[in-house]
Length: 219
Ligand SMILES: N[C@@H](CCC(=O)N[C@@H](CS)C(=O)NCC(=O)O)C(=O)O
Image 1 (cartoon, helix red, strand yellow):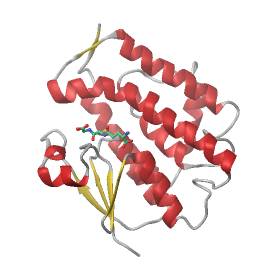
Image 2 (image 1 turned 90 degrees about the vertical axis):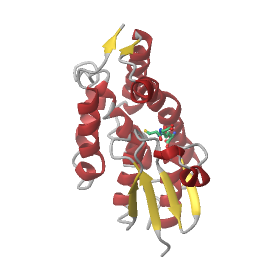
Image 3 (image 1 turned 45 degrees about the horizontal axis):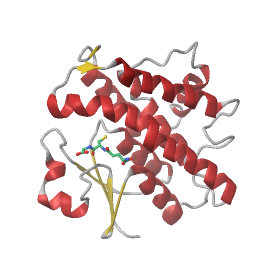
Image 4 (image 1 turned 135 degrees about the vertical axis):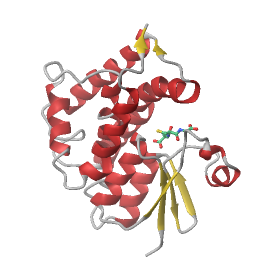
């Protein structure tokens, strides 16, 4: 098997999504920490690998893939013993991809639009409308879950990993009210039972929440 290297950062939700996938597939990999606060993603060497200067970045024996969603799909397609985590069935795959795009364009962007000004420029005020975007994301996620245990239905997929990695970090900005969002609450609790969840996601989430605790003021 080729050598897998994941470039990441311990508090990054999309990195957690890749770690969940790697662990679920029981793949061996090397992990290289990129210090975003020190701007290491803008080093010449890293930019050659990923001109978009983001983590996660996967290096599979010289094949370079970035964006967590693309990485998770690739890993299951290439290394999965089954297609359970990323079904090949056309309709199931289309529904799953909708959830991935939702995470990439709605849920994660709600998070990134709040955290980037703080991390890059120490901006500590957050306009209410950015918090409203987080709430909109929760509202959609609650609806998507419906009466299903997972975001695409009856079984666990990479869409759960991607959406949960983001959703579990978003309480840094807006708590997930268990009464208003019982389905999200139960779904995150369900995922936290996975044997690799603590190491792949929960530890990083704890650090993420600590970083933002009492740091921001909503205006
Ligand atoms: N859609 C991308 C988002 C990746 C992303 O924005 N990662 C952040 C860390 S959470 C990053 O690398 N930021 C550094 C930068 O944009 O320069 C993914 O899912 O991988």
